[in-house]
Amino acid sequence: MNYIIVGLGNPGEEYIKTRHNTGRIMLDYFADKNNFDEFEKDKRTNGLLTKGKIGKSSVILIEPETFMNKSGDCVSKFIKSKKDALGLVVIHDDLDLGMGKIKISFNKGSAGHRGLESIIKKIKTNEFIRVRVGISPVTPSGKIKKPLGEKKILDFIIGKFSKKEDEVMKKVLKEVSEALTVIVEEGKDRAMNKYN
Image (cartoon, rainbow, N blue to C red; front, side, top):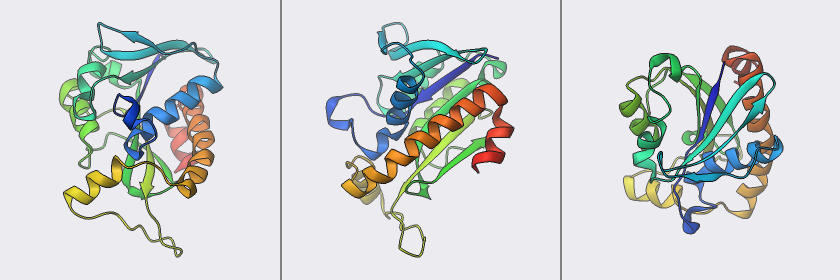
């Protein structure tokens, strides 16, 4: 099976280390770890692309160069059918998970994530794999302290990781990279059993 792995985020210098760019951060690490070539700008799709192999599978890595709420414009250039969508993996930040937690999902709604909303709308299916990476603050007892209200949420997601969060994210990079390899080599069910 061929896979298309998409890391969601916003283009531009000012967004590089923000929480909303978690998908792109994870994908950059995965590309590096697996010796993919540098990402190159693809004018046709308005994305940054690189191609390679993981095991026996051909893999295309994509970072849409549109803002988050237009992510589907780029993704839909690659996903033309429900069958194509089965090989789509989208990595994104998730406010419903505590900082440092990851969860692999399939065939779910967008839960208000604008990037996912855009992709679902454009490819007309939600039957694809997601690697959800938690960004919400957590109390010492493990309870999620999600920001409330649209302005607070926006300020939080486009804010940069704190030093402490950065340390947590370094561990998550490895875990997400391993999970992506398991998805490609052994399938989503095996990855869900192992990482959820």
